[in-house]
Length: 216
Ligand code: AP5
Image (cartoon, rainbow, N blue to C red; front, side, top):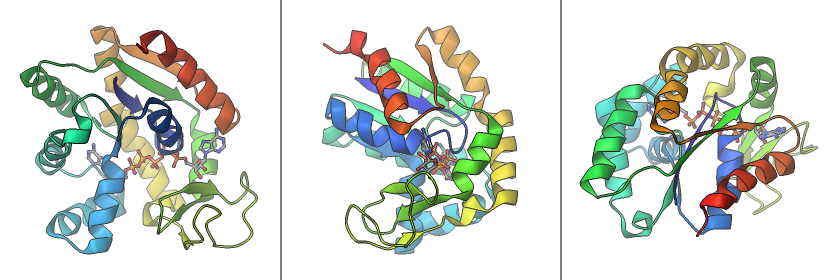
């Protein structure tokens, strides 16, 4: 299955992507994770992306699209994938559509995680990520009192773009650039809205319930 996850920053895309991709045995492809890995490895791509990410702006399309094209061309993505964080605007969505048509395929379903902005700010300002395995947690909801990852013992850190003023800017960018994808994928007939409030487990149940009719 070829799936896209959309929704505002902090909607829970990364959290849900882990469970959905693992349930369907498909690779999770997160453009944010790929950019962050390149930033920490100090690559040329990371150097180009960092200034945009720190401000909460989108990395330019030509950089992002070339990176996604390379990743989707890898053998593990041939029979399905879950995209988290791409596409992020209508030009990226149009390019993805053309790219997949060249390979005689298309996006099967777009899950739109719906959550209000105050909840987003609450979620992002308490988010912690593991620098070793990438596990996502939250200081309140996961009752974290130390900076050690429960999964692997790695170090938990706060993302540079999770400061409140950057979060507010990312939300503006989402409204302007990314929200129009709801209309785009609605017109394509593949959009499914998922209520993304409630516990992580409840949201996973709703998402897997929406995907069940499409599983072969
Ligand atoms: P990216 O990493 O994609 O960030 P984002 O879209 O802003 O999304 P987030 O990762 O912040 O949130 P999420 O929805 O994944 O939420 P999460 O599951 O972590 O992109 C970062 C930057 O990279 C961009 O700003 C841009 O610069 C660049 N970039 C990336 N893709 C690009 C593209 N295509 N084009 C151009 N530039 C691009 O959850 C958040 C918190 O909430 C966590 O603490 C979690 O534990 C908690 N939580 C999750 N679900 C629940 C729940 N149900 N109840 C309570 N807490 C919950």
